[in-house]
Length: 262
Image (cartoon, rainbow, N blue to C red; front, top):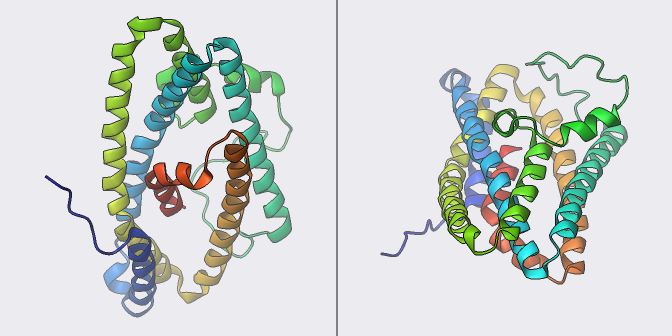
């Protein structure tokens, strides 16, 4: 049986939900003021699938890279180094854009969690290196700590490649799990317009139209940073001998999920 396809692209659904959210938030604040639980459910659904996808996709990628090139140690080290460098680059880009634009200066954001102690005291690079190796993989998954999960995924995939034919059944399980997770991603993405509508309507119902401009500025700077990072990563993909557009096509659902989560 062929799957039914929605005639309206998800990007247009998101834009429509944004427009309706603005209208309902301004003109019908009483009807939308109690919808803040919908974006929370959506955020939980995103967190539910993101970390397992990171672990399994990295493990599968490391397995295939190591199996093809027969350079297990170099593949593992290069993969871990790439993820660390990409994370540092993304953090530096975010800090630079914040210094240039100060996007959240007028957003009047509410602090929802306690600030970490000694946040501005500096970086303990020894602790950073130690924390790359997860003492508890389940805890790293539950705590949304992506770097230790990435390291474990690379090591797992490399170890599976070193195991030879005995790893093939496990690889098939991982591939089946990835297929199921991406199906869940499709379902979550399908609900993103409702989450966008509820989030913007609730915001405007509680803070009024004055909250819209700072929010647009904040999101604009965030998407600018993602765009710059996308250009850099596209260059890396091109240097590796692949088509960036082809890669983006294959990972379109997670990308849409990431953008809608913003």
